[in-house]
Every structure is written in C-alpha cells, then in structure tokens.
Image (cartoon, rainbow, N blue to C red; front, side):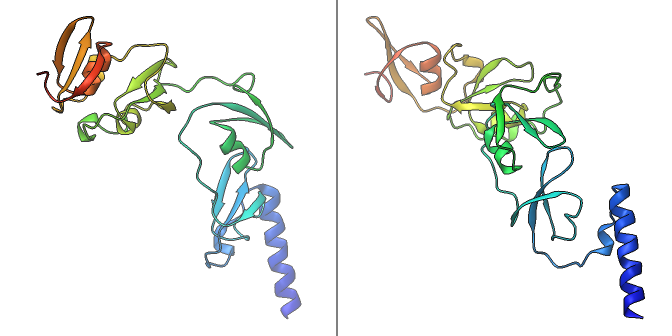
Length: 207
C-alpha cells in the first residue's frame, strides 16, 4: 500500500514539474529557506527545498541582500541571459559570467509613478547621485527622496557632471557661512551653499 501511495505521489510530482506548475500545497510547510534561480534567471527565496523544485538551488538560507545601486550587467547562464541591476544581483543568482551594461535587446526601465510622496521624507541633507526615470543623472537630497521618485542610486554624494539644484535642497534651517570671492553670505543650510558653489567658512551665520 505504501509503495502504491509513493508511486502515486511521484507520478503527480513529475507531472507537475513537467508542466512547470508544481503546486506548493504538495510540499511540507516547514520553513527551511533556500535561494534558487528561476527559469527567468531571477534569484528567489523559497520556503524549503521542496518548494524550489524546478529551479536551480544556489545556497541554503534566504537570498542575500544587495546594495541599492544601479550599475547594470548582462549575465549569461544555461538557458538564457538577463540584465541584473548590479554585479551583486547577478552573483546572488549564481551567475558569474557577466559583461558591463544591459543585455542586447533589453529596454531601459519604463517610468512609473512615485511609490510614495516626498513629503514623508526627512529633511536631512545626505546627497545621493542617482538616475532618474528618464535615465539622467540627478542629485537627490537623501535616499528617501531618491526612492520616492523611483530613482536608481549610483553613489553617495552629488553627481559630478551636474551642479546641485537649490530646488532639491531640504528646507531645514542649519545656517552656514559661505564665501564667493570676497563676498560672504549666510546660507540656510549647507545644501544651499553647495548649490551656489560657495566655499564653506564655518557653521552658523556670518559674523
């Protein structure tokens, strides 16, 4: 009887795998996560080894997190290729054969509506250089501002090829004294000073 049940289970299992629609309700419910690469090349955390059947298991445990930096690479693996956000994402998926840039034929990501309002962001100035939804470099006041506008982080600090725009500066009042030539000016905060390309003299109002 047990043999018949085992054969029946294996028959259903093989049929499900061959159709690519293996039902997770046939798997045990214990949580023993594994990181596996799906047919599309995506790294995905499965609840246990059974749930990962049909995918290539990379490692025990949940898939590791990668930095939120957009430096696309084209990764090649058995069965195809895929554009990953950065080399870490490719490595996380068990793909080690990569080239810089997007894979041929891939389209740049399409602009989408902001995920949440910038009004919910803190007003601290911790500049991040990122790519906006049009693919242009833009300096954001902080990581929250970048994410709320669906930008992709490139590196910390202002973008080197574009001056800081005063419109992107926070409205907090933390005065600094800056100098342009022989003229000294009190700026509301250091972001405003940087946007004016003034040299920092000291924190606080000019004396």
